[in-house]
Length: 349
Image (cartoon, rainbow, N blue to C red; front, side, top):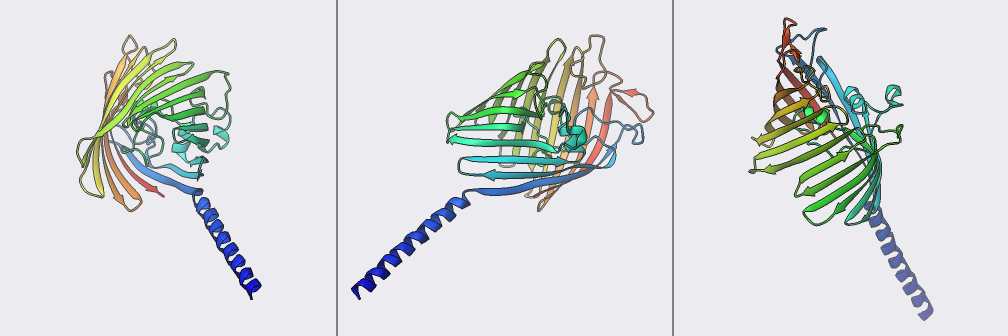
């Protein structure tokens, strides 16, 4: 009986230990998760002060420029997050996605659907290394419509970089201060390096205010992005940037983003942007004085109404340039301004 009791005691201890080990393995497994998220968007766009037929025009900023009922993109993001390592595979389909990868030199015309593709290693609580292709760290706006308040995009966003391919280090210096340092291929050359040149980037963050620097072989850009909650219902965002193109012109601009939350479902916001080009800049405005200088002031009023995961965004936009001929009017005559309307539907999952 003593031997039998000893046997059952040993077996009971073994089973308890095995159960605890199994629970530890299960608990460890739960720290590793594969996620699937993304969005789809579509919109209707019409000019108010210009034609909507074969002569239809749009502001020279990225996305939401197609006439009538138009498609944005389908975005599917696969992610894996382990205790120390993980990856993100961000795939895009549709016109907005194609525009986002415009500078992919080999495969954009044959079906490249990669918006972001990177792996990361959390070396410590204070240092993370990331390698691959990732969206830019500069600017207030991003490619995905789910992360922007306004549906159409600013000039500052449209003529800054979209993506980088390379290696970056994110460093936490304190609870309030962060630093990013990176080396990349030429800006927006996302698939590989066809030039042999490299760009260098840095970001200094303090309490969600970010000072950014990008030294590309063909240009230099300095950018500030930030925002502040003035009250529980009033937020003010800001973006300012200066870009100088080697042996060419430059642009500079500032955009303010005041937003007021009126209810749990509805927010109204304004984007007021001033954008200036010198010596033809990057060709964003399209009409210049005899020195190659021009500016544009754009006001975009957007409403955002959310029903579960669906967001409806009506938007009125007025672009007013300094030079005649930047736009046309309903009579096809040269004009300084353009009024337009957009109604967008965005579903995020």
